[in-house]
Structure formats: C-alpha cells, structure tokens
Amino acid sequence: MFYNTIQYFSMQVFVNSKQYLLPQTVTYLADALPDFGITEPKGIAIAINNNVIPKTEWRQYLLKSDDKIMIIRATQGG
Image (cartoon, rainbow, N blue to C red; front, side):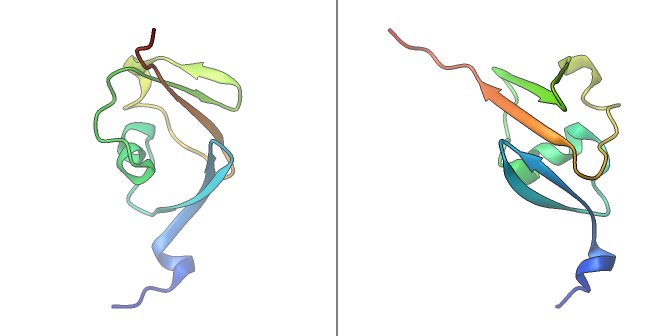
C-alpha cells in the first residue's frame, strides 16, 4: 500500500541531528520513542530544543514540527 506522504506524515523532527518523519498518529513524545528505535526507556534522558524533559512528562509532552530532540543513553563503563 502506498501512502501520500503529506497525508500520512504529520511532522518532521530531528533526533540527534537525524531527520525523522512522524506518522499522524504520533503526537506525544512517549508515543514517538519506538519510531526512534527506543523500546526500553530505562537509562534514557531526553532534551527537546535544549530543554530537558522529565520522564514523568513524556506522555504529555506534545511534539512540534522541527523539534530538535537529543536522546542520551546511560551506559556502564569502567
């Protein structure tokens, strides 16, 4: 099935400088995480337009076209 790009995608955002086109059904940050390849948000920090978004607000944070999203994953090291 082919989709008209304008109708199927609602906005573009940039995640760690990479462009993503989000479907119309994705409007909140938490809903977009799978589109960014994040299935387990443990150890993740997110900033949008240079503002850190607390994890407690991810479900309510409304994304806007051209948002600049930075995702940082904590790792163990030694």
